[in-house]
Image (cartoon, rainbow, N blue to C red; front, side):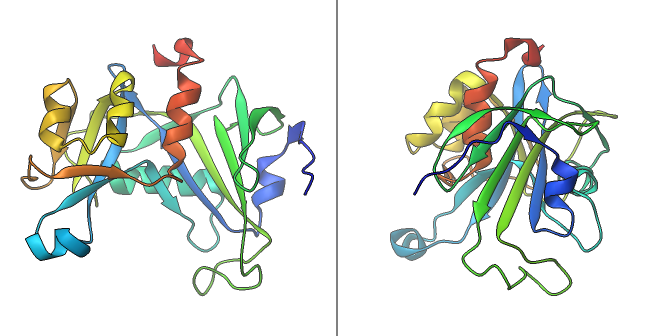
Length: 222
């Protein structure tokens, strides 16, 4: 199948009455802020009663009636416990999850995302939950942001991990929380997290692409 490249995007036009998720890229002291939640134990982990913590970006799915920008700020507040301010990105990338290609596009929106992803829906006429729109694609939009007040505690997640970008590849090596902290990551936790637990990240996690793209834009790390 041949996919045609997009050159220009209008996020509001693409996502109005369409399924989407949204989140933010937040850097604190050169460290990327990500979320930690316990992964449901399966297989040997279930038998040993061990916990694995799943790393995720700051963000999540839409609520009825909200725009993709409102979704990003609401999700950030819920997970960070503080308000965030979105900034228009000087560069926007588009990632087509169907063919894997990532490339720069121009963006017409006043607050442009750093990354917009798109994935075909297997059931395009079935909404994720009642009250939400259905459509051919689900969009994933990640915006640059900064916090209004210092982050002092997690919101509705179990922990917030502040990870230097050069440690990101360690997440593919079954690293434990303690090992990552020893390498320079820092943690804000809602309750005491098990330091010997392994960390995992889903292959489709948008922040895998975010980290790769940020290495090409050191000006955004200031």
